[in-house]
Image (cartoon, rainbow, N blue to C red; front, side, top):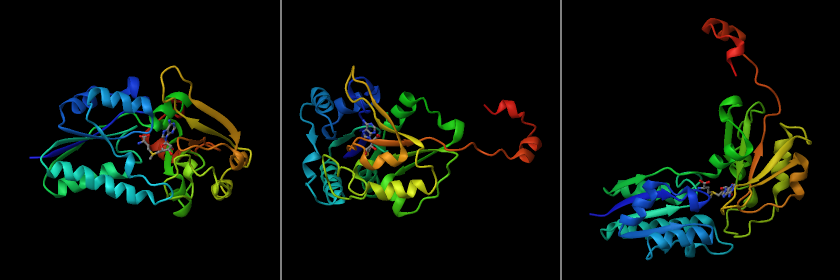
Length: 260
Ligand code: SAM
């Protein structure tokens, strides 16, 4: 009977592939991959030479959801044929990755065993490179377009991470990103909560070994003219301190100094 495992390659495939992922790539009878960089693709092909890219389902200017549906159908087809099927996606396969979750959900609904393994996401790299600990102020993480469209509640005393800023306002496939065509709408929304000169970071984790990450600090208002790519993640640090609930703190007997 067929089965499905979904694995992630990490952001820098050389070095971030986990033992679980390598084992699954080796032992599966059918391997698919959704990987954005050529080195990562080569690494997968070295481990499983017959691995098949699902990138061919993307069509320039077409809705990305159409491509995702076709990918899920291709994966499910292999599972139904009885393959021990593996799908590898870059980063963490379950983080901002619709087709992988959908493939797992549908495989299980059809009675197949389906498992997802965690891996290193862009956000994990960001915490390391920017020295941000989500524990200190709390951290919100949103897809940039959905953040604006659903008017998500902003807490300026927490960190804010916005994904897919390079594709802001665009549901179609644009391999170069849309070069920030509608980014002013995101800036306007953020300026309702943060000062225009609040320093934000354009972050791109290094994909290749011996390369430095992009960590470009700019005032929020300058985001309108910034160079944005499909790999850009925006980090917005807290703009103010969190307010302590003194009464509950005292009731719990917690010393203020203990709240590092
Ligand atoms: N599954 C991926 C992960 O675990 O990081 C995320 C895939 S999501 C479809 C694409 C978004 O992830 C990008 O628009 C960007 O926000 C973020 N991303 C991807 N590669 C990145 C990189 N090298 N550095 C920073 N962010 C990245």
